[in-house]
Every structure is written in C-alpha cells, then in structure tokens.
Length: 122
Image (cartoon, rainbow, N blue to C red; front, side, top):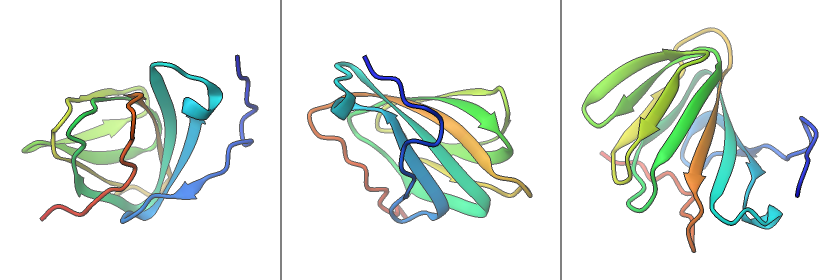
C-alpha cells in the first residue's frame, strides 16, 4: 500500500511536448501490479504532439481547464469533469488554447516496458 501527499511526486517535463509536465502518481515502483496513474499539466499555449502507443489504451479524467484533444481524425474540446478513452494504437494529441493550466489524470495498463517517449508523428 502507498499513500503519497499531494505535491510529493516530482513533476517532470514531457519529452517532445511544449510546456507540459507529468507526475507518476502510482506506478510499478509502488508495487502496482496492473495499472499506472499519471497526472499531466499542460500550461496555457502548451501541447503534446501527435503520437500513439501501440500496446496500451488510456483512460483519462479532466481535473481542470479546457483544452483540445485529437483522437484519430476527431478533435474534441474537453473541460473539467470530462472523461476520455483512447484505444491502443490510436493517434492522439493535446493543445491547451485556454488561459489557465489544464490538468488530467491518465491511467494506463502496466506493461513490461512502457514507452514514455512522445515521438512527433507527421
């Protein structure tokens, strides 16, 4: 069992993203056998480029802000309280066009090796 107070997890820049940070809130290092939970923060004007993860799906919950998320060929405007599902192997991206930070939780299945790199896809 692990309990971490808010603010105790180190924020890290997201590779290949603009003004975006990640916190690994619960992960394999905590002994989680099936899922890993992250919190993303995208600053105003920040973005995560187009990318995909061949082996993992994403379940997300918007904590604050408004932003655009592209999933496949659709663009969605999301806000606090919205839930998002991204199937494995689906191209997706994020853009914060608002004037406040956008934050969301992202839960992914634990895999043997998680590719945390967000390669730019043209």
